[in-house]
Image (tube, rainbow, N blue to C red; front, side, top):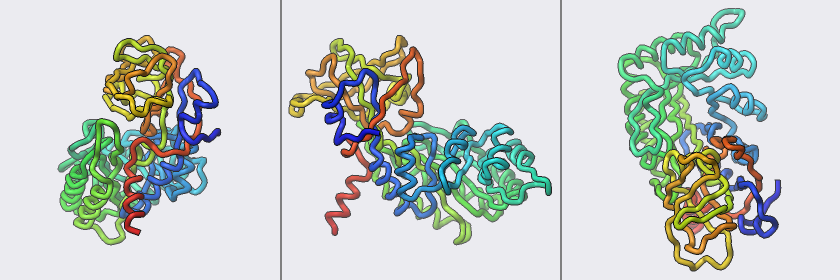
Length: 394
């Protein structure tokens, strides 16, 4: 993989005809080290966010050896990494996926949120000697989404008396019993974790069971042009305080599953402007590619015009259109760029390492990317400021 000092230095060597995914493994490594150092428990990367071998390698090298997988395909891919521990945390799995996960890949950790799913897991992990004796089962609890860009509580999770009943039934067959929840993707304030841990507290008391592990899921945020989250340290403080109040033993494991927060700032997209119509720019990637979140969910990613001599030029808002023939292939923005941007220019779109690569498809024949590695800093960072503060205190 070719390495360049920056996106601009890459363009000095060639002018690509297809979009370019530009990874910054050092940014992923920095984020991983921060979580490993500061989170009061185990860190399991949400594999679905980005499966680039360069970013996965950076996370692994920084000390993350646990991964949350959500499908058989992800499991098969992640299982090739030496010495990893995998958590199969999708609450609804096919019988084939459960069976292969347990018997072929040695997975012992599964999530569930219904008695039917529990029955499937018990049946498909059966051994010659009878029911499996080594299952780690996490009951997924529904919690309210507060300050999250993408709420998740409607699809998965159980609550109230039904959750307490499921906990008791799961305790009977689990070697380790856990509770898990997810506050929603891109949660910008830590109060969602307060609510989630309070709900966990109530359920443990109601069910009267011994709980061996608490998985607080993901939801940790990244920075975008339209989103300035609270510092990650405030999330850690809230989580520590909430966990300390839980009616569990000191040996209870605590786990988190960050995805976005580990890789969002670790990848950019370099696109070419193929046409300008007033305040609208037509570029060679879009909502059916790595810019799904910008088109479908309204994310406003940071942008930079990759042309020298425009650093002091006034900025103006632009709307972006992708290359497909579909009219929903539109990124409303606003994306602030120098007012002289024109056809043939290249733009770096930053901080889309989370889900950009993962959601890109091949509609209309698009979806091919060149790939490079960049050595400079991301446009926005949740971690660089923390590094600077630490150095200033030294």
